[in-house]
Image 1 (cartoon, rainbow, N blue to C red):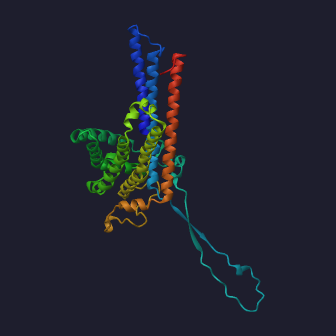
Image 2: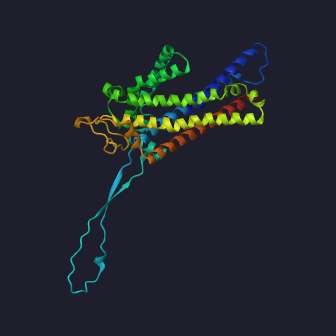
Image 3: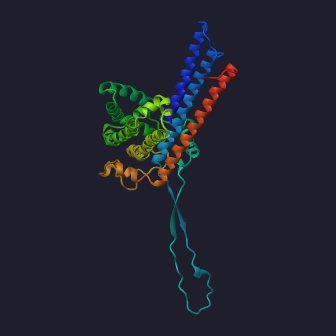
Length: 377
């Protein structure tokens, strides 16, 4: 969805440049009919695109980043309720001459799971604001900005070294993720922990902690590359590039051939969705939970979190590894939590769709208002 938003925002900037180009043509005596006020249209579209980009980034960061991460690590708490059973003999009349011995019954203890904080977006944001202030929804933003900047720089450098073909680019992406794994783990720790007086750069994970997440990070990065290149490989294997670049080629096919092309297109789309659901999703959750298991004992979490992962993790001070294994990290993420996370992603996707529709409608409205009867082509 982020890629779609990027494409649409780019189109808005392109429209702005076209309007300026139309203005320069008009100054040279050329017809400028599509735009009555080109500079005003360009300014409005550029400003709208900037706000659109910021809105989409905020939605992705807050809901797809912060809230999703908290959903991945939250362990719902249970409340103990003691119930004293009532004996039926208490109400029986004592008419018999035989003396009855009083019966004693042990109270029964029941555990009732409380509703997770991350069960709803609204309750999660409300909890964050109550615990860490109004800007808590943007927690970790400084670390994220540093990470993405470093990621882009390092990726460009490694891509230049490895080459620009498919496999070298994938290797460069995986290597970049592995090199920056400690910085990514720092972001997770800042997001899931309670407010701390320490600056974020003073909470950097140690090299020893970084070594423990090398494998989960590499697996996650490899999964993401698989979700990209499996559909791309199938796309070219089915020969769909000719129809994507020239729509007329598809129209010239027979109905049977058109049906085959459509089925191939669906297969390409489904391959990406299946890979994302069965490979990327578990790898991402596993990485986050392994990172969370390495959170320092001196830092409390902002949502309930079982550091022992059901007794599977022992602290290093008592001879344990101090980190959850990849398999246990995924297995302890139960089906209720998985469903909760999937529902969250669906909500984020819906919010992004609504945001895109709103800003596209706003852009069209601006052009109509400025140009009157003219419309943006």
